[in-house]
Every structure is written in C-alpha cells, then in structure tokens.
Length: 355
Image 1 (cartoon, rainbow, N blue to C red):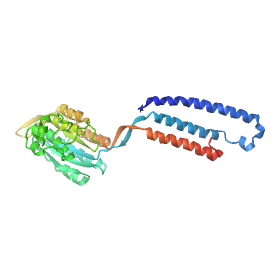
Image 2 (cartoon, helix red, strand yellow):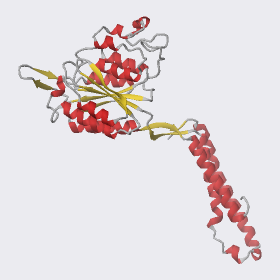
Image 3 (cartoon, helix red, strand yellow):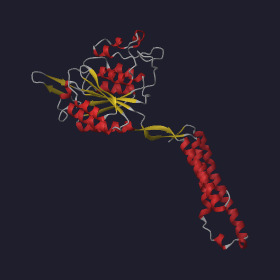
Image 4 (cartoon, rainbow, N blue to C red):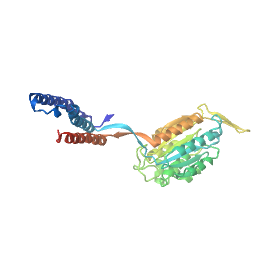
C-alpha cells in the first residue's frame, strides 16, 4: 500500500493518546463506583463488563480508519477490465504449416483462437485479421461467437508475411476515420503515402504534427492509455513484405492502443518442405518485443500448442480482470464513518445516551 499524502499519517499518533485517556477515565470511574458501592444495584454490578467497552473501541477504530483515509492510500486492486474490443491478428503465412508444433502451427493456432473466443465474456467484441503476403479483416468486431468461430475455420495459408499490414488493418478496425489508407498498404505503396493528409507525410516515421498523430486529426495520447480496445498479434516468422511493423506500432502508440504479441513456434526455427522446394523459418522475437514495448503491451513466447493455449488463457484473464493502482480514500472514509455510527447506535441502545 502506498500513500499520496503520507504526512497525514501523523494523525495516527493520537491513537495511543486516546487509548491512554480512555484507560485513565475508566480507572477514575471505577474508583468512584467502589467508593459508593452501596449505590450500585445488583443488576448493574452483574452487568457484562465487556459490553461497555464496545462502543468506545468501535469509535476508536473508526477514527483510526478515517485518519488513514486522510493519507490517501492506494493499492493494486483487481478490477473488471475496461477493454470492450479485442482484435486478434493471426499469421497465416506458409510457415504456419511447420510441424514443429503438433500437429502443425496453423491447426494449433486455430484451436487456441477458438478456445480464446469461447472464454472471453459475451459483452466483449472480437475482431479477426489474418495475414500472409497481404492482410485482410476476416471478421469485423462482433459479439457473435458463431461468426467468429466460423471465420477462424476459414483461415487459408498464403505466401509472404506482411506483419505491418496486419497491424494497420487491425488499427483501421478500431479507428475507421484514423487516416489509414488501406488501399495503399495492401497494394504495396511506400510508407509515406499511407496517410491521407499530404501535409502529414513528413511525419510518416513516427514524428508528430502539431500534436496530432500521423495522418489523422486525432490527438496524440500517451502509449497504452486507450482503455476501450487492445490488439493481440500472433506470428511465427519475419516480415517479408509490406510496411514496417515498427511504424505501425508507433501509430498504435500515438493512439494509446496496446499490442500484445505472441511469438509462436520453436526459437530454433524449422524447415518446411513443399516437395520440390523447402525453406527455413525462424521467429523474429526482436520485432515482436519491440512492437509490444512501443505500445506498452507485452510479449509472450509459445513453443508448443500447450504453451499457446496457456498464453491465450493468461491474456483472457488479464484482459477481463486487471490489477490497477486504485485510491482507497473513499472506501476507507465510508468504513470509518460506519464504525463511528455503529458505536453511537450501540451506546444509545444499551445506555440510552451517546458515551
């Protein structure tokens, strides 16, 4: 627990003083009662001794809690996540045919994606993007789980790995008016032409233009601050075509969107045999880590189908319930007020007065 106003904790020094004052008052009262013992009725002397201490102790506890509240305590509290849209971006390049993951990478990826979709709460919308040599939105964000599962089953492998294009397609889902020229991206135009505003092209490498993000009238916000949506990118290889994913990550960071990346497959790589020809594929962990770092997301490695299931399950838990630094002042103030009120009510009930 941390405190935003720790100086107020000095008020706790009054607690032992109040305890001593109460103890001294009780001794004085006891002495007076014994000196006039003849005045005491048997019913009074037989009265339970502990009950008369309850209201003062509750009042003391309430004052203590309120003193702590004045120091504005904060703590990491598990709260429902504010994310309501998740875009799954899945690599469907030919390298996903590799069998270093049982039975092969694409089948394992589809199974993990289906399990993820079924576990996410029904009020969260999910969109799907697949990418190989190009990228396409196979399912716009929806809460219809049947449509999502059907879209996952329709994945088809293709040559090439356009990781940057896939990120732009995912971001265009979230910001349809954000200034991303998907036609230019998917036709392979140079990066500076991917923004609609010609005046913004000078900032195409991540520079700001009068406080605005590239190619958009949207303001630049702190990375990771967008709390309505996240992107989860799974890839098993290196980019071979399309725009640089680092540029796309900077575009996402300018809008506060977190990108969680998953490197799928063994780190040693694998050789894929197509009969007449074969090629070697290897994870590009450096780029995936950079994308996650730029956007304040997180990178995960999954070397097997079981690992991938675990990663997706962990992401589901992380995105549904997240631990956030939360100020507890209001909560403790209410608790202190309740204790003080209860002390007064018990005193009134038992003794007919507030003591």
